[in-house]
Length: 350
Image (cartoon, rainbow, N blue to C red; front, side):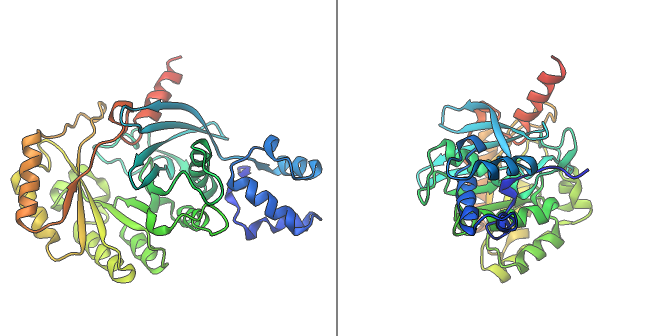
């Protein structure tokens, strides 16, 4: 059975079915504008009622709706979204001095099962469509008062629940939809895509000339340490990831970001710091260090502040570009998958 689609799944040119239904082309323009403004059918006042009724038969007007909002002390907001099929995903709004960033999900759950992440605790339910990913951006943009060229959302990170490159076709279509000049027109250079390191897809993405910021979840400097944290490493080991990162830089001229969650007793000791420096020496890259967000089901903890400081000292000594990511939303279950999993438990126990 084919799932009923939302209107956000359709690009501007794909709305030509309006003309096939016998309506003039400008009606498609009006519909596209309404979709971009994230209007419900009840809010669209400039289309004929006959057209609205026909659209209702075939399409959902919106892909997601916010059912819960948690506000953090740092003005970060975490959203729980409900999809049209009843499934739940989550996202995070992060205000910065340079603009507002929205972290979006690309799958319901995840099958990567990384040892430190809450997203994969219940496995992969299904992929999100391009329109469901886009709906997260349109929804929050409208919520924050974004209109026309004055977007409320300026930056997007595909770092929520799910592995973006495991949902490759839908993610690529989303990138084209969200950057379309008649839509939100968010520059691909303001979009970050985080991957566990599915190297064939990194290469495929590099060849598509979509110059997003590529963030690779590395989290360990050796195969033995990484395989213990990330099962994907058994399929695509560290050297294949490094080679893919080099290829991505050669094709796009965009510096690759390596995400590295510091975990007590696993990858945060001095030896790991020196190993990481040797691994990345000479690469055009940046290391984004993260003090681990605690997930009670996983049981892993962040190292002490002194250990983090020593790790950074070694990277600086060895000339490796790095920063310690400012933790945002920690008081509203900011780690991927935490809010969704707690909500599911509440519903199951009701």
